Image (cartoon, rainbow over all chains, first blue to last red):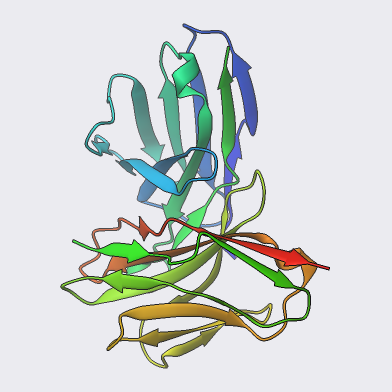
Length: 118
Length: 114
């Protein structure tokens, strides 16, 4: 099956520092990856759509200068939380579309990254 | 635009009892439908999906869901649940025009009690 990994799984940082989260599709190519944020006991909120070789498309209300997304290859997208603050603490999940499936409707999710900003 | 409503935020059930998690959607275009499961502190795992064909779809661990176009529903069922089924379940839709954006419901917590 399609596997998506995220690294790190958990990170604790000081306020004001930047944190990079990697999302990799391990056994398939993904031209599109998605970044979500999930607060406790809530559903996933789409932050941005990451397209390989082009700029990410951000959802309304998501600061593009705060959450930098880079999709340099067909198997890797990164999310950098710049100048992190405690309110950025959350569970960040990425997903990737498998081009091998019919029109790529199915998204496969990474295991998530728990970010805690002190 | 599409939207998804999961009518129950929490569903407590005893082990080996049947369960139904409800999901309704609204859309002006045809959609593809998904159920994802999330165990504590983990990402989402695809449970089953409906893209086309038979309206009844099944997962490998005994769950099934039926696409009902007239009622715009995609309820998830299992005839006999296990303790290990305790998790958060999310219903999601994606437009068949394939914008790629999944629209999620609010989630339903399935609590299986011994």
